[in-house]
Picture 1 (cartoon, helix red, strand yellow):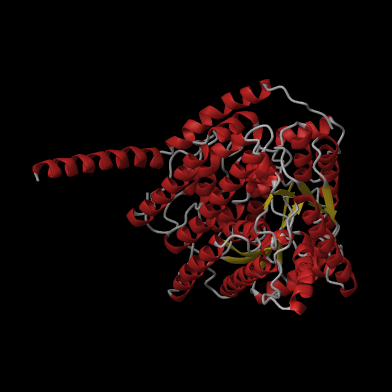
Picture 2 (tube, rainbow over the protein chains, first blue to last red; picture 1 turned 30 degrees about the horizontal axis):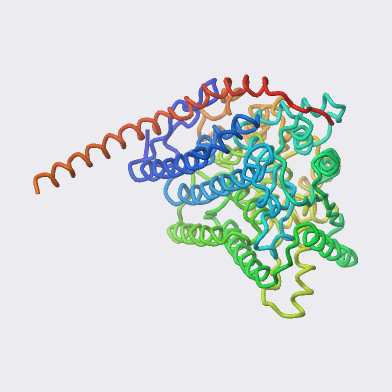
Length: 520
Length: 55
């Protein structure tokens, strides 16, 4: 039990079971702060579960059981943190928790099986989990809700085994075992009759990969033919940096908006769109300032918290929720204070790493482990390196036309797909530019074995890292499925490299091998 | 005045007791230990639900 950063043996908190022995003592002030945030999360969960319809949903949907692990997810992402870093992580995590609770509540309100609020359901547009919600920036009276976010994406963050049941269901019905387990799980939820049914219409997209087409095919059949919910397929171009695809991309946005207007009876609101655009630009500016700090010896906003927060704020929120602007401001204020005081988040920084590729979703807090166990600072990650373009934010006739191109740009440059699509320039070449900008001496390269777009460049990554003298550590995994490579299997790939190539000893040896096979 | 004082003392004791209980739950991770025990029961319940499972 220690106040000082890095004084605890963090591995000692692990048990062979689902949960940890106890929470950390971080010194009086930080423990009381963490305790107050825990109370806030319990209150958020309490407010959610007090509604009878949410209790009903808890007993209807299998994936809801994973939400029992919400406080533990926050603990995992705040492990070892003190002072400003603890507060930054809580601002990010707690807001995401609150936002997801609201999303669940809205879904169950309109769900035909649960709340069955028909008037509310008419105002709902279903969106994909991996989809920019830019096309909803001009519909203040509509709700863009993602069923897949709450049934697939979040559950795996909460419980590493959350996807297993649904992957098995999908494969029982003949879906291939070597596709990405994320859309496979989403398809499994639909096949298993475990998705809320609501909405006036749905917008699906191709923004992730060919795997998302697999999932969308299965899901849209049920939505359209059985539930009577019409679907629009938003197909963003692959080579998104090319000028000649932009008109097509903008037209897809116009078509999606017209589809939503037709099925909801609502009209696009330019005033609201430009309000949202201002917030998008504000968040981009804050993210850029955090990345600038990460180029120095004193990075402040980095690791899994940066990744999770950016994913939520950039993709799912996309300027529509003012609370995220407030959170951005608070995070920036804390980061600047710690930066001025030359503070560090861990006892020792040994290596500066760019984390690239698609992260193992069942082990999102791996980046916290990298820092605490080996002193590897995950300066930034592929998912956080999204668009930094300033979009038009003043309501003028020219900007109304430009807005379609801006929404198209955001959609094309959705998290992950802005790198996995677009060719070797965005996936391979820009990595080395980032290494130089961030003065990184190593790359942690996630190799999601079902992500063929990334795996295809394996040899070229190796060649180019060798030529530049940058240490490249491959970390293989199967995204949503810990049965293929476990969390310890993920850690061992780093442990082996650190011991055999660098010949280093871990900063916290208790973290090197952990009994978390059965952990949430 | 005396009644107000007594009420304040009672309120303080209640708040202290609440703090003691919730902090114990927080520090020893009792909330997560409880939910970890509940989860298998829920899984059994989900297995019993009739579903229209098809592709």
